[in-house]
Amino acid sequence: MAPSFDNISSVAVIGAGLMGHGLAQIFAAHGCRVRLQDVRQEALALARESIRANMSLMAQGGLGRAEEIEPALAMIQTTTELEEAADGAQFVVEAVNENLELKQMIFRRLDRICPAETILATNTSVISISEVAEKARGRDRIVGTHFWNPPYLVPLVEVIRARDTSEQTMGITLAFLARVGKHPVRVEKDVPGFVGNRLQHALWREAISIVEHGIAEPAVVDEVIKFGFGVRLPVLGPLENADLAGLDLTLAIHDYILEHLDRSTEASSLLRRKVDHGELGFKSGVGFQTWSPEAIAEVRRNLQEHLIRWNREQGASQR
Image 1 (cartoon, one colour):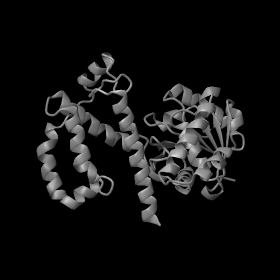
Image 2 (cartoon, rainbow, N blue to C red; image 1 turned 120 degrees about the vertical axis):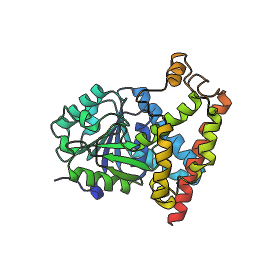
Image 3 (cartoon, rainbow, N blue to C red; image 1 turned 180 degrees about the vertical axis):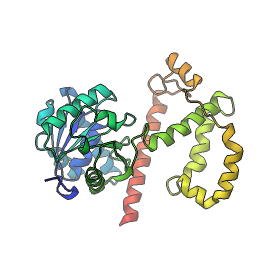
Image 4 (cartoon, rainbow, N blue to C red; image 1 turned 135 degrees about the horizontal axis):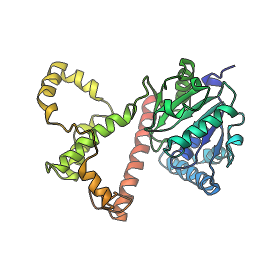
């Protein structure tokens, strides 16, 4: 018998890195028993401490309570064995490195281990879900669930239908993710970048092109977004904005401006030169701008504080 969204209580998370520990936190904080698997024991130990730190910071910011931290951690068991993690799980989500062969191997094994009613999800942000599922037999129960980093603070999850994903799998996944506090959206076609990354990188391509052609400095490009149309984005998406402005005006603007926008199908030569020269951004201290350790810490802190404040305000508005 296939599970329904309201009886899923046992979840396995495969991969305890940047995204995996955050996914375990989400499910455990909403009352699910979680088995978190990674081949590295040190990653599992670090995951528990990261979850404790995340939840402590959230509690300080008014999201949850400090006394909820240890009970949530008690819901999480860790293991280095895939079979042990998947045993009894009703919902499995994979969050390993973006390596197609590795993901295919994991899903082939999960397909053999897990009962037919267990839903198998991949958190890939760019790889085709259909290709990830290719080596498995039960492809109808494999689905894409693209969480955004940090997943415990960014509400969106893109639920992507692969070529063989059943409507039952889609429905249960969407409802279950809503039950654990996320904002799942349905993506009907398995295309590169899904929805969010296609939109995000279209913007990034134009932003980099503006810098490359000397139109404006990097900091100015970011300021234009943060202090301009970016202020409207939380309450007014681009298609809503087009309707608000009028599609006739939108058409007139597009007839004029689209030929002037970057249409390259290859990565920017400026971006490639920076990577070749080791200018990797925060990793190296130099990217489009120069970053001191203090400036990096400030950006990270500002982002985290903004996301906590946004979640707190959203919760208050829904009460």
